[in-house]
Length: 514
View 1 (cartoon, helix red, strand yellow):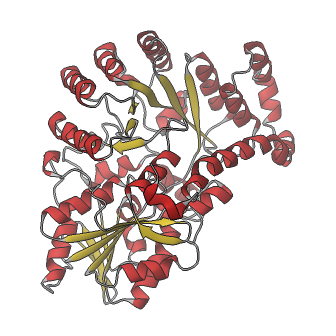
View 2: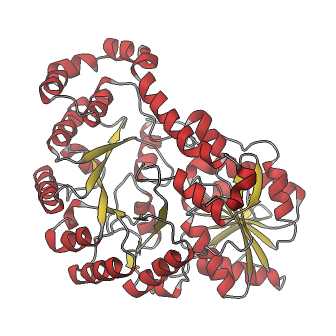
């Protein structure tokens, strides 16, 4: 049976969709992948979370699904309205069942059943395969594990398959380009190697003109369960199972070697694991040795400070580690209690980042994730984080996020219960990098601008900060937002145009591009 898998994300990595495609193909089904990155929205507003696609995209998708027996959508919360619109059009025009999977259907399955015939929770390889097998022989699939469905007003809530213990049984992601398609402007075209290269360049993590990024994962899951993260929900969903799992180095290297041979022009690798270094030092040494010998390209990954110790870090630096992302989030003990990060220690965090800077010798930059705009956080809490951030060694970058109440996280439930938010969908379309116009946020931005230390000390003098964060001054600062943030917004828009408009340049000659 043919299964059409649709990805709405701006990045073409879409590891979940690609792994599902490989899994279905391995087990006898054919797949068609359709990538729908809304580049026009990125260029116009620096966000692809708008509620609809360009006119005519739904008609083209319907045409691509005519010969399918099942259509699957992967989505995170920000893409809920976009996917809802496409799914509604498909169900109205075609008598083909639609299944939703991914982060949002996992945390809000009943809501998603208003737009899909089936919803898949958690890991979906086995569930999607069984669903396709049942539909192919016209057998009722309402009892497939990991799926919910609705019939006659009743919701069938099926138990979960056990997690895949041996990740080496999952085939490497499908980068065959066989029956792959991509949205270019307002037209869905066959995905060629040259188009793949253009999109990869535009979505560069390293922000260099010639970067071409390959994105993958070594692990699944996370050893932590922070209250602002979906991993907390998944840990409860799979309670009692080994949620944090790792592929073998052999399996990972077979994927990277295949991609290097298939796309020899990619320049960097990004490992998007929640905690790449949560492995035994000898395993990281084995990976580092093979990576340097067989791949030998700069790479980027995510750390936690708990695992940022020399036996784990040194081999990675030697193998080509050039950028690290770490979750600082907050230095406030009170907020870390709320975030369920009791393991966090400000002194230990600074000490380990200083040690990393010494080991790195300037070879690797650290990006620090920091959460702002949380209504539960006070100015005093923010000042603790600001003071710690100012101590962190160079080279560094503060990745500043505006707190988002995603469904499924513990703080979303808390905020609904105590009245902090009233609408459960309040942040469905929120871009978590668009921060509030506040003086304290402005100070965090200044740290990235490398202003003189003496000037920063004056501007961050606590009495001044409290004054500027008081209601009258905060109101005035907000009114000045168009002036204060004008250059920042202009820079973001310029970056988006520079990186994404190239996708549309000379598209008629795309297949001949080098």
